[in-house]
Image (cartoon, rainbow over all chains, first blue to last red):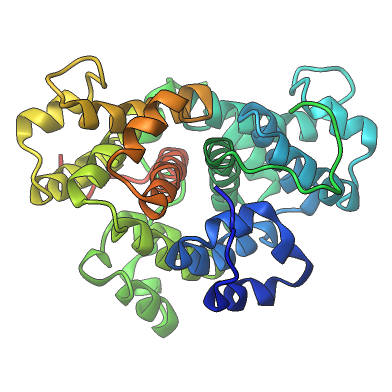
Length: 172
Length: 183
């Protein structure tokens, strides 16, 4: 399901996104203008929320991996790199929190994503560790970010959104 | 470590008490209309910047173009699958208003193959299970939904499930408690 027509109202909705308007995800979602209009600011506030960018990208990449969404993964690789994750660390996200090499803090963030996906909540131990570092707003963002990106992954998969031509990579 | 269900006993982040609400908080809560006093909103409003964008999106999901009965089947199955008692109990009421009988609501917990569902109802419930278990709606289920839904409604299916999935995780994690008299 992708945008095929040159509907002017659709072009109007996409225009403010600038370069990002070529995203096949946005070009699919814009078929439903009411959802699109409200999704963009909501997604943006979580992408530019209170969490440290590096922690947020650990959550997003782990959610993308767990949702088996190559589209989401490849879009977030450059954002993760800009947020301070090395190529090696980005690749290691796929191996999970127990893999050697993570700091305790990073492992806790990755474990939070896995717990949310597997148990639909956070254990007391993980909540306590996150509470030692995060304020209330950041704590609220943790399940929201994981939920949003995990579920965006399954929406992308279901719509069959294809990667844009300039994005290359192998597997999700 | 306490038992896994300890989060349901008390909030990890409590709702903002009436005495601590300033004018802006009151305005933000008022935007939730008749639900302004619900613990989900009085908790989430602690993050104003997020709340301001989350509420309109959630409202668009609740008032999606999907037939209300279909939407509530998706939401209840999602609430059940992500173990959110809060979401389940709040939506039992909405589901009844949308035309689901008490027997049907209870049958949602048995899943697409566990009750006396029409083929289409079963496809809706199956879509939720596939999204959560397989991260994609299968071709068979998509085709079944597409017999009745246009692209516009098909877009709503994973978006509604995703939103209520996200809300369920957040309610569980923050330990949002049911309001007195509910459940």
